[in-house]
Length: 141
Image (cartoon, rainbow, N blue to C red; front, top):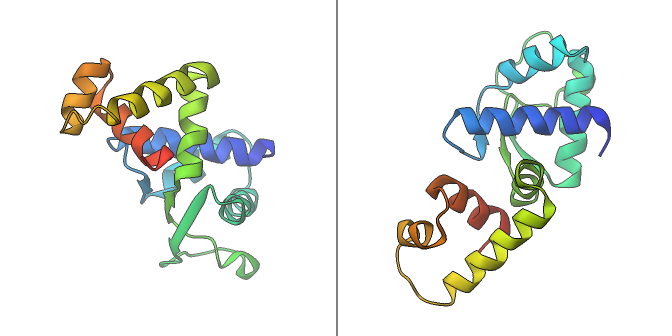
């Protein structure tokens, strides 16, 4: 992953956090603004988005009413989903590899104990419910 792609994924992760941890990002305008302030051109943002799509980190929804975009980049989309692979990248960035691995191990062990509701797992693991749900999604547990 190059610097532009890392910057895009970081901004996508922040956007996800701002919207309650949803893996769906429905406002790329905020990401464009943030990355533009960091010196990335719109074309570089779209290029990074397409590279991340090809690598499996995000899934593009569609190209709705995107104005003033170079026709060569018409596959870029203002709405996308962070895939489990992309969410795993975001979570490892947030927690660090070793802490994230421990969380995943603890969650898998808890799953095998048939505790019941995910909220009960979160209480038992002493982890935020949203974080648990994001890990379950990322690891496809």
